[in-house]
Length: 195
Image (cartoon, rainbow, N blue to C red):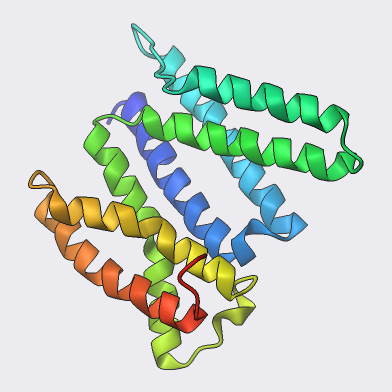
């Protein structure tokens, strides 16, 4: 196995593991869990750049780069007039980390593999649904019911698109049949369909 393939696998499973951890660890709300997510994403970004430099003809896709740049400019400008500079800086850090994840996922080859990453990252929803059914108190893992509803609703469009697409692999479709009821269980438990 080549170094490039090893790096690609590390990034793929690293992003999936980070997404799963961020959801289960109270949505990375606490300082320790948020710091861990930041460290993981920055480390994966450095690994991603190293992998690109090892390629003979390195190229990086930057979809929506201009809107992202304008968004960051607006955040920076608004932070200059903020009454709570710490919170404003934290919002900028969050947006930066989110952008790093977005651009790394956008560069996963082949693109169908990025869809697999999205599905893999939805595992906490199934875990929450099973936990609810067996009577485990998941309030220890989430901030509140609205956050749970938001996580569940996030996966709904992806699940529907996979089922509607004729090109979706059979394994993805089978997984989606498990994901959809899990989303419904989480939403019923949360008592909210608004997130």
